[in-house]
Image (cartoon, rainbow, N blue to C red; front, side, top):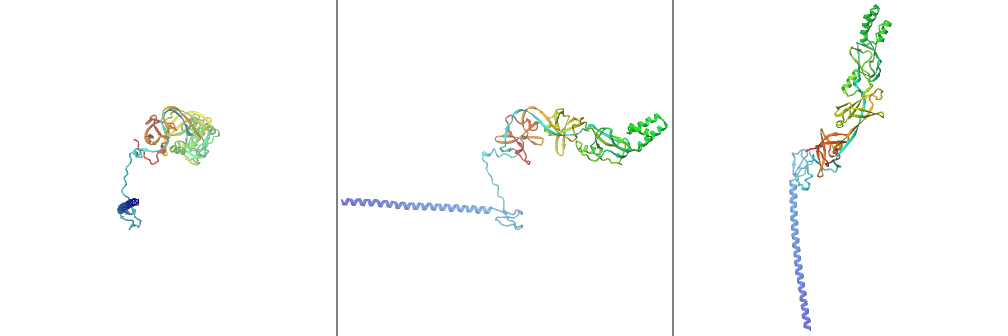
Length: 434
């Protein structure tokens, strides 16, 4: 029994000794493996560091520095310019080349052909559209009703009864008094023949005075008083607004209509005039012009004899357009619409403001907002949406009614275009149209 217990104890001790031996061998093996791993990791880190230092050293060595003011100064390290003492700056390195992914190829296009924007767009539809055009205008003189007052004899102006341009005169109103040696001699001849009693020659002498501008009442007064009148009055031959010849000629050359400033006339008392000189021009305001100004694109849809509704001083009247004339003045193109107005009741005053309204009949077609069209000289451009990109496209506009434009060529139904073309470009843009 005792021997059995001793054998079991020795067997147990032997097993425990074996376990301890395995544990020691495992510890020695683990320590060696850990040491080996650490050694390899250390060697790897040292190699990376040396490679990085070599790369940095190589990069630093390749960098060159130069002076902004003196590019001939080139150094391989920072410093100052020996000429101007400015700090050297790093020279530009070679341009980095980037590869563009194929998914971006639709976006990498010439910037003068396509635009990426979230601006509002709309689809083109065929529709009937009519509009009314409102115009601003003014009342001006009808130069067809202009009369000239010329000197029938030469002489000196003794008295002047008109003082300023655009002064209102009536027919038969006294304009001036003149002294004329020729008129004085004709009166003396009449009185001589009167004293002789030669009736036939007296009749010829009266005719001569009439041709020289002397009124019948003046001739009768000369015969009655038997005295020579050395200051013969000159009367207006028409009613209207008087203007001296120098001012009217200058203004007709410099502008398209006569101004209405009440400036002093050029003629003065004591001035000498010659036979045939145009002294004044008189404008009759019984018939006047109403002139309206409009955009040439809008004028393309207006025709002669088309009806226009005119408002003046809260009063309306219907008239017809008598003239459509293009003008170019001070760098601007515009069209002039002229209407002849009857002013016998003096309802219109020269220089008065007029408002005109022209109704445009409805027309079927591809009408788009005028804001969607951008003008490039005599070419019209819209921005059409193609695969989420807006692209410039030339169109042909056949009519323009202010807020809407009629497209004759370049678009079709369901084309999607930008609502406002001007928002897509700036003043320095160059648009390429395919």
